[in-house]
Length: 128
Image (cartoon, rainbow, N blue to C red):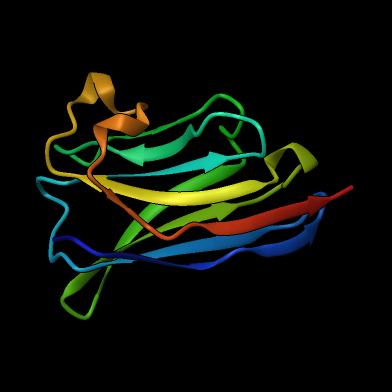
């Protein structure tokens, strides 16, 4: 069972920056898709950014493009995925989740139900 452990998040003023981290229990993302989702109160969980299962192709939701950046790095012998969030807006307030899956096809990359593994979630609050 793949484990995803999140850190980061918190309270920031509009225009500020935060970085989220998701430490995984796997050694390579060569056949494993990873993504960030978020869920605001009363709303459905939505895709934010992600890497495809093959080739490391990254994609972003239109609402965060040019402000957020997803990246990955090897930490020891395990992989960690990051979400750098700049120019934060009050509408970015949500619980953020990292997600992963070995069976995510590119066409389903933005669907939460395509992922098998989830982090515990972390609150991001942006004040105006």
